[in-house]
Image (cartoon, rainbow, N blue to C red; front, side, top):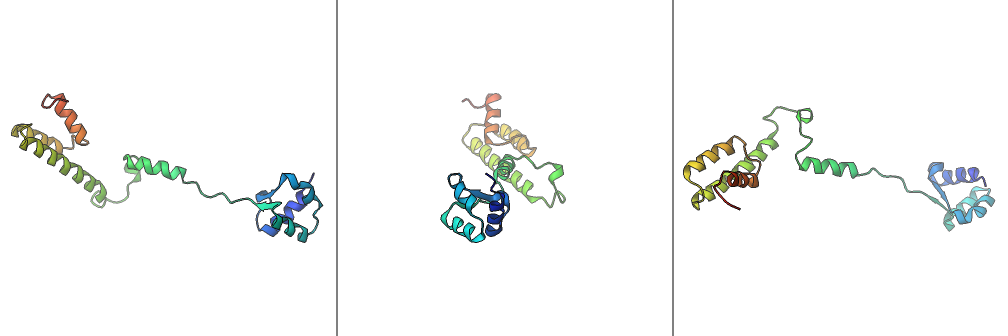
Length: 149
């Protein structure tokens, strides 16, 4: 059954391309008998012919990129615009980390877990960006035998 002319008419009425026209498979005989635009309008009203939804832009790729950025990926030199001074976010991130680590070692020193000499050593290491996060600091302290699990 060739429904090319009907599909073309329906596309014209629905204001879309021929590939976006959906014809109900169970009512193809009825559609085949329709020869005027008026017949087509009545079939559209009855629901024998419909316009397929337009495909929208997928957010899948965006979600993947977002999760990677959250992990700190996609921030290499090729992605950067502007001088280092202009890119405050990096510095602010570093400051946040350093402040939390310094607070942590201060707490350990005040509680008597570490000595002041160890505190000074760790302080310098923190300043030198040795530790990635608090858990990394604690792993290091376990390795050198200052604290136990």
